[in-house]
Length: 286
Image (cartoon, rainbow, N blue to C red; front, side, top):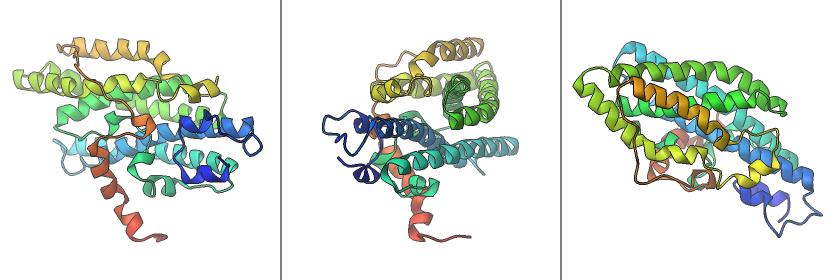
């Protein structure tokens, strides 16, 4: 494998753990750059895809205030995605000599090249499903960005300093809705419980390091180990569920593979909507 060939492949852990890497072409510094680019790309894809999903609520939310709130949360996530994808492209360019910009990574990759977890790509469902997903993911992001505040990578630590404030609001917003629906009417309680049951199989993948272990090993002090975020996440989310008079789900299956590029059909349906304009008018600006 040569450094130039990496630009034509999705960045993943395989790029930093292959016996056939020619050390004459890729030195340890390059391998570290690839690991960091892979890590950043996964975080960027999470925020990009969830921003797209939340944008689907615009004009469809149950209240006009909620329409605006979800739109603003989507914009926060999109801002995080822009920073992360731009940084991933920059890091890739240091190895390959050819950088891809945020638009290239957002609009010109195919499904198997995305590295987001499955949770963010699932359909919105009803409002309770969206709030259950928001509680799970925003609580995870809060712990993630809190950990990245002390990252030795200046770009990640600077992003975390801004983003942790945004996701604190996202988490509180989701919390208030879960409490309101869970401890509301019998109908709202049942629908909120059904929503938690529906999204809970996607939780384990968020904290699973099976597909990213090599990347995390290559980035001590830089990346946040998702498994280490689980205890604080669990304390917060389980307290919300208990206060909302809901029950902690016990799923019989779990999602996996998103970080390795294996996705559900949901992402296959989402990407054409997100990418169509850019691909139909390449190079257009306005």
